[in-house]
Image (tube, rainbow, N blue to C red):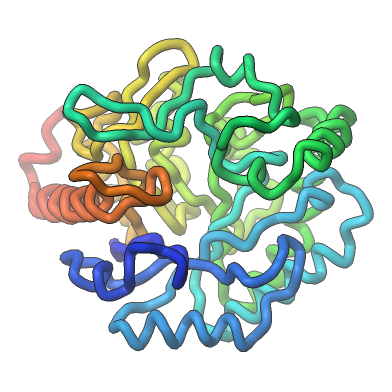
Length: 351
């Protein structure tokens, strides 16, 4: 596997120099942030980002994300927006980017009810409680959520939510299929692999459909355009929030189409409720050893990053994206892969 680390550009308090010092990290996962969703990224911005990363002794193999405009998800007057998306794929391919991570979640990206829950050890973490989320009025304002909620005023968000009242899961699948049929041939020609991120959490929120949630939906996604360029970002925290998902089995089934992996752990605290934990298996509900073993057994050799971490040792900043706990997670992941790869016959015993 190839270990990477998420970086949010010059505004990120985590610097490229810090990332370079994390053992085994060879690449940065980043994006261009100087334009709105749906715009064509300038070649100058892409090359500036690449040169900045390369000058720090790191690679830029994965872009996360090229946002999908809401009109594309809604299926409304979106031909030009899809054309723009295709041009971004071409430009990133010419710049040497190998994988583009993206998602098809309506309105909100990954969603949590709490951005800074204090744990018994004094660290702080992201938490999700579906009952609490259900009591929020997303158009009223007055609370902070990550993702698209911060991109709109209350009135704009209300208008967008009204637009989605006519979009059920079936129609969202239709719109995703139309999008994939346009972009995947472009990705093939550009030498880029598209890696769709599953919905987080993997169930509907605010009456908005969520469709990339389990093994059946992943299989359906990959069958729409049966191409190596149409692949997955396998996020253990997103899929693992549902106890019904057998992550090692899913990895083995879809291994050839997994191009990027987000490794993190969650502790399921109730029905549709969880907190994000430190990465080791002992800290959460997911068996990270079995997950890594499934990747290694399946011949996975793609890109991995330690996903969300807690805020520890007094660190502040973007929730889930502090330096310290993600660096610890990266070191843990490196050790897991080494142990699994060297395990030999011992690892082949029944788990």
